[in-house]
Length: 200
Image (cartoon, rainbow, N blue to C red; front, side, top):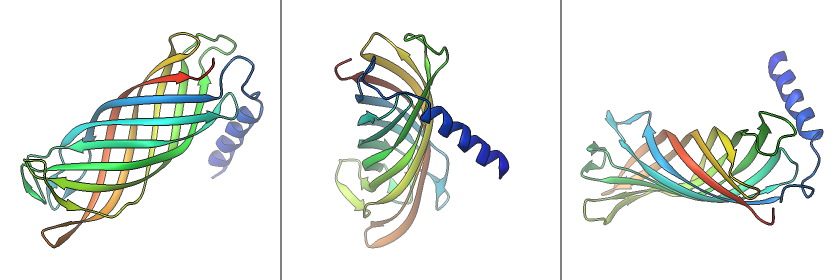
């Protein structure tokens, strides 16, 4: 417990010591990211397969190190066989939000790569589609969570490219043909993000 408190206090001091944006970096950022996702669990003994996803977010950097973000995301998984039958796709869509933390590897150098961490929540639902793209199952929206890390490489004063990885989890009840199934969708997403700071 002491180690956790010490780590939290250290992070707070780093954030508190960082000046506000507006001198050299714009506070608003738009980001697009995409990449494959790899599920880590099973539902009724069957894997949910692997897939692809994309996400768009907007962030506000209220210090040089810490931002709040929000946006919308989509991920599709294509298992060979699942609780919903063969030749079905599972789509996760909805909203994302959270905090983003960034720290340069070389302090004082604008072109230095930066460690980027984020933790947040999701408000999403799951849809099941058959091989023809028809929706055969759905869930209500619910709260999940995500956490990730990456390395942000500045391209110029406005653009940044960030390869990263994140873990996401969402648990929902999905109804297919009047049968309700508890689905715990957990996966690791490996992504490339491109972001643009407005006005920098």
